[in-house]
Amino acid sequence: MVLSFDIPRQDLTGALEQYGETSGRSLLYESALLEGRLSTAIHGRFDADEALRRLLAGTGLIAEYTSADTFIVRRAGERGGRQAIGNHEAPSSRAAFFARLQRRLSWMMCTRREIRPGDYRVAMQLWVDASGQVLQARLLASSGERERDQVLLRHLRALRLETGPPPSVTQPVTVVVEPASAGRVDACAGVRG
Image 1 (cartoon, rainbow, N blue to C red):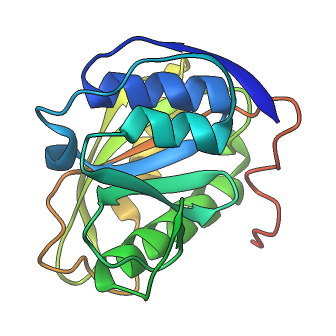
Image 2 (cartoon, rainbow, N blue to C red):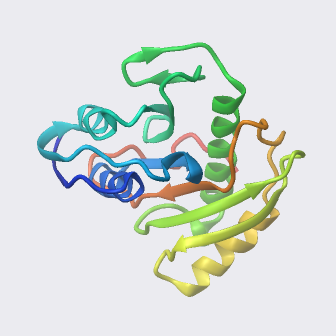
């Protein structure tokens, strides 16, 4: 699907958030990885993959999909675990960690009516210990409803992954969940309670 993008050159965090709002895709990234990096400006009509390639051009980073509508941002030279845009690479512990995190977050949110993804956007940061337990969670941007934010934080702080992150993952990990948009796959499709 071709979309209209109007994202000026700016800090990469802001550019990726604008990209997510336009494309409806959710993203995960290590906060430290984006620090000091600038995006390429993209103006015009592109499919979502091409727009993302252009946005990341020259940053030394690439996007790797963990599901149809979710991607992680990683260094171009690292070995990935899923299909990277323009790349096919072998599994890595970093990519496996991000895939596990995405699956657990999807399960946590999709199986609880009050925080099920849909018409809201939320940005959060997570700190995960070596055993996989979320030690700390904070919202960078509210979902727009105080009660939903409190429920989300309570469940995030109780979240446990099968294993912790590999040592190469810098924390916090930032997660942005975008609202559902027309023509987009249901974020909870295939998630069982």
